[in-house]
Length: 222
Ligand SMILES: Nc1ncnc2c1ncn2[C@@H]1O[C@H](COP(=O)(O)OP(=O)(O)OP(=O)(O)O)[C@@H](O)[C@H]1O
Image 1 (cartoon, rainbow, N blue to C red):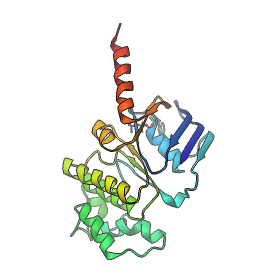
Image 2 (cartoon, rainbow, N blue to C red):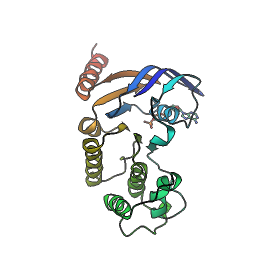
Image 3 (cartoon, rainbow, N blue to C red):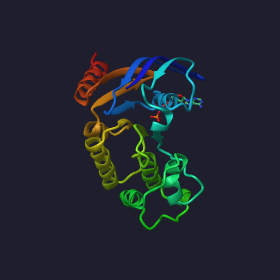
Image 4 (cartoon, rainbow, N blue to C red):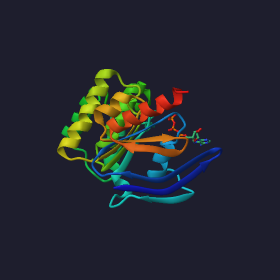
């Protein structure tokens, strides 16, 4: 379980201030909230890309090599598709199995493009490759930060299926940032909603739906 307590971070005029947040193990979590509410900042803090000003991030038994993340504009190594895909295995001294590489290339629709210069891929292809690169070494905690934003509907369904297949075989912990309610309702077991740097609500997708409806009604009633 990832446990966040009294976490604070100031970035210029933005203040992140999360009193308490739990990401229960082996569940699919949705992280939602308007632009600029602090979702990516929270992920950077948990993954160690940014240091908090105050507070605790307890990763439990997880080590940093068990954690990975993808972003909306994924960074591609200036190398081939193949070398980008196997990079996480290489740095963990693991030898990539041919069938594993083949499976992921196929799932990404990149079979035959192994030797293509990865930065020349389309934005959707880059997102798929970064998704595969994040999962190929079997992490235990994955942050997916709007990674499916540029994928076509068939690819989104394929990647949603990959997530549900992994969960039924050997579950891991997912935190999925998305502005698309269908992702949240199709996939997530728990939803965490941020607003202006704070955690506004945590609950099931159904509870989140009620919460948002109630909030909307309050905002528009006189
Ligand atoms: N390096 C930085 N310098 C100045 N402000 C920053 C920096 N990084 C983030 N911010 C500000 O912090 C706030 C939170 O940004 P963050 O990217 O975490 O939001 P988000 O919820 O992920 O937004 P989005 O849904 O648009 O991706 C924003 O107001 C942003 O402008």
